[in-house]
Length: 68
Image (tube, rainbow, N blue to C red; front, side, top):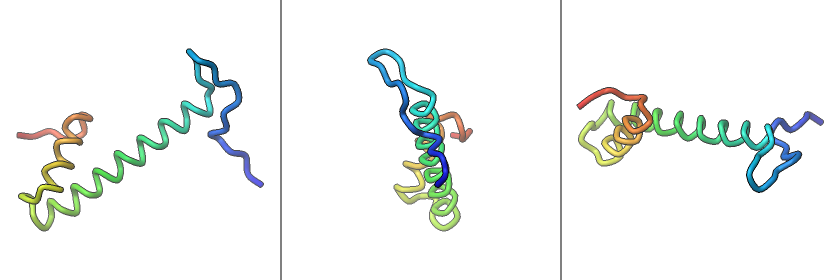
């Protein structure tokens, strides 16, 4: 069985363990990738769609998309 890199080992009220930090980063990276893929797909076919525009706004907020 493989070791879980996100295992919580010593979570305290004001501090979190390395496993929790790694899990947080992995979740947010996957969300960023999902939003980026969604934007690329919809912008290709209909850049005026609300999904393409919402995804673009999120990417702009994250500093990953420059533009208007």
